[in-house]
Image (cartoon, rainbow, N blue to C red):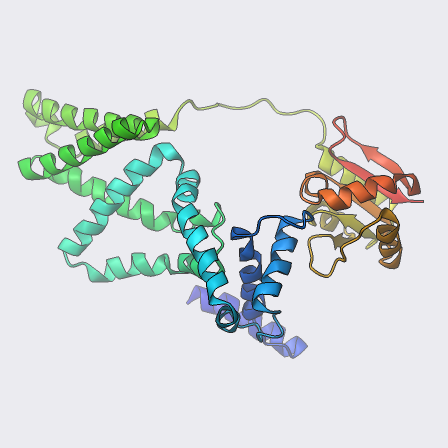
Length: 364
């Protein structure tokens, strides 16, 4: 209900004031589908990988207009190319999950999450199980557009942590039962053996600590039965495992003196350029923050230039007044950056940080 009220209310107010009630989801989803071509794109053009991948998608599946912004229509045009993308992204998904949730945590998160889900099935708690599964449903869209960004993989973390908590609480409350205790101990021992066989240190570390905790649980229950037969004892041991796996805490870092180079560049642009001036950049953040008009290179409507003169003519036609340079320009758009360096004598460098990574150029 809060979602419907906030989003629906905005759509209605915006639609009544502009006459446009479109959500734009079809266009945005199709744009992501084209970007998903990067799963199999080999970087042949060598411009901007994301833009080049979109051009490749248009060659393979047709344009958005040709497909009426329908991903299904696009896939029908070339199912073999789509299946190739789907295969590649599926094979890379486990590695991305490990990266997203940190390798040292994955083993325990997966183990206790499965335990928690199995408990819900055994108790026939279908409503909670269905709610948890439905919460992860947006994750499935990644298989359609064939993009799984590492940050997006954290969206289902609420479900994973909830099922982990359910599993841990169940084990802590029932580990006095011999059968439950042995199931946990044997399963974690097998994981430890798997880690030893595959030489996966993170698996050995996590599973080894867990086996140790489980052995200490039984030892404590035998030596101090009144104290250690409560659920708080095994939960405390697993909490200690979490602290150990977390690693050293960095404490409070020293406050950096001075203003970040990005903010200095922003202030220079505000001082040297008129409001809403057209600024060429690799990404929009700093340019938008300076209240300038972002002119990006990561778009399929930017021509492919063979010479610096052609690039210069296009810049003049776009009425570019300044250039903001950072890593998204020098690394993500290397071809354009190379051409831009040949035109440096047509600009004044009004800001340059110590390392030269952040720069602001103004057209003479």
